[in-house]
Structure formats: C-alpha cells, structure tokens
Amino acid sequence: MVKIGIIGCGKIAKVRHIPEYYENPMADLYGFYDLNKERAQALAKKFNGKAYDSYEALLDDDQIDAVSILTPNVTHCEIAVAAMRAGKDVLCEKPMATTKEQCEKMIKVMQETGRKLAIAQNQRLTLAHRKARELIEAGEIGTVLSFRTTFSHGGTDSWSIDGKNSWFTDKKRSCFGALADLGIHKTDLMVYLLGENVKQVSAIIRTLDKKDAEGNFIEVDDNAFCTFIMESGAVGTMNAGWTNYGEEDNSTSIYGTKGALHLYKDKTCALVLERSHGERQCWDMDEIQTNENQTKSGVIDAFIDCITKNKEPEISAQSVIPAMNAIFACVKSNEEAGKLVEVS
Image 1: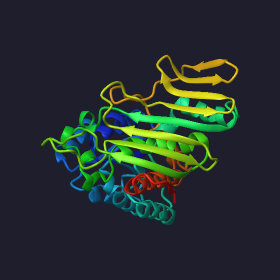
Image 2: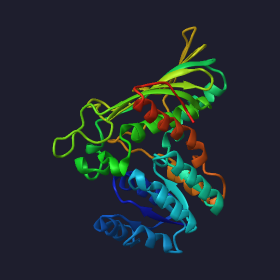
Image 3: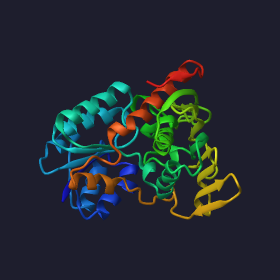
Image 4: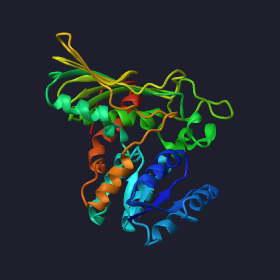
C-alpha cells in the first residue's frame, strides 16, 4: 500500500487526484495540506487521514511514501525538490515548473535521490491519443506534413475553487496563463504523437478579454497562438485559450501524405482516420475530459503502478522537458513580436 500526501487541496485535487487515488486499491489517502487549513481538515476528516499545518510537516512524516503536488505553478520546483529529498516519490501537476533552470534542478535532484518524478500530462493516456500514435508509427497516414491542435474553454474562473480570485490569474503565483495551463497539454501531446520534438516556434500571446474581480485585465495571457516547426519539418499550430464561451474544444487534426487523423473532433467518434483514396475509419473509444465531465485520467493509476512495480514513470519528468522547452521558447518569441525562435 502506497501512503499518499496531497499538497494543495483545490479543484484538481477534489475532482481528479483524490477520487482516482481513492479508487486505486494500492493507494491510501493519508495526508492533506493546503494554505486554507479548513480545506485540508475537511478532506482529512472525509478520508480518515491527517491534516498538516505546512507542507514541510507533511514531508517530515515518514508514514507518507509519495505526494501529489497540486499547488500554484511557481511552487512546483521548491516542493518537488523538498519532497524528493525527504524520500518521497512525486507526481507534480503541469506545468512542471516555470523556468528551464527549475526543470533542470528537479531532474538533477530526482537523479541524486533516486526518487520517482512524474508529471500529470494526462492527454498521453487517452485511448484515442494512444491509438493515433500507433497509427502514425505504422505509417497509416504516411509522412506527417502538418497539424492543428487546440485546447480552449471558458477559463479558470468557472473551474477554480476560488473563482475570479484564483491563483491561475495571479502572475506572481502562476507565471503563465492559458499557454502553460492548456497549451502545455497540447504541446506535450504533439511531441508524444509525432515522436519528435519542436524545433522552432513563433508565438503571439495575449490577454484579450479576461478580467479580475475588480474589472481589470488579468496579469497573464488568456490566449496563445503558436506555430510549431518540428524536427522532421512538419509544421502545425497550437492554440490555447480561456475565452471559448461556447463548447470546450480539445481537438487535434494531423495531416500526412496518405491521409489524416482527427482526434476528439467528431462528437460521435473519438478518432477518425481519413485515407487519401476516400476510405474512412472510425473508433468510438472514449470521451476526453472536460471541465464539466471529469472522466478518469489514468495519471494516478500510472503513478501508483510505477511505484509498486519500481519502474520508470510512464510520464516521466525527462519526457516532459521537450514540451516545456517549447513553451519557454513561445514566451521568448512573443517578447520578440512573434519572431521565429529556436527551441533550446
């Protein structure tokens, strides 16, 4: 049994991490910490666990084997490093960290301590995305030429437990807006699906509409419009937004020399393969998560599995670095008026 500590008891903890740990027979929800002590205490009471006054106190408890870090972006590195040095395996929410140096530090400490460090890039685990990767690797659509991938919804004010006062829109705590909240998902997905890294980016990152509780524009971006050039030469767009006031869009289309793949674009079919000669295949496999429909992500099961079987995490920190580097390059490109930037 893996005893779990939850660090950060906000919305993502309540709708995803905690329910999925609870359903896993090898996980025991043991400890809870949040800046809002009442939240941690309420969850501790509900799951017969223990609430702590600080994350340091939680990490000092030798009973805890592993932790989920579900705190504001700027704290990810600090808490993950402390957790690994305290002998805990770590599942950290995305984005992994807010600077390249922080990402590198997390990897270094992981290697020094021998702990496991997984990042919650859950889009890799959906059935349609897994099948699409198989089809691409098998050459079913030929050589990939271009793609379009989008993740947009109405924003964190309708998602976060704190509404418009959420840390998501406070630059000091989040650092990024929609780019790293939603864009990191689709950037990581394209690296995963195509089996190659982003080589160059051009990005325009803007705050178009979102306002705080006082009616002022939020400090972080609510939209990101990015062009990616992959190592193979394939070119695509990645759009992330918090101002989609219609139906949530979490779709991807990939175009190759022999056909195309459409992922979570057709409501009746999770994955569509269109061949150049007109044949069309459809896989009705699953539904992708939305803010209103929180289906099981698979992230928690994969994390517990890597601990109990002592193997590399399926979504390891190392594997997420290429997508994080692309995000950092997008920020640089935006600062340079959309100039094409090499990904470090």
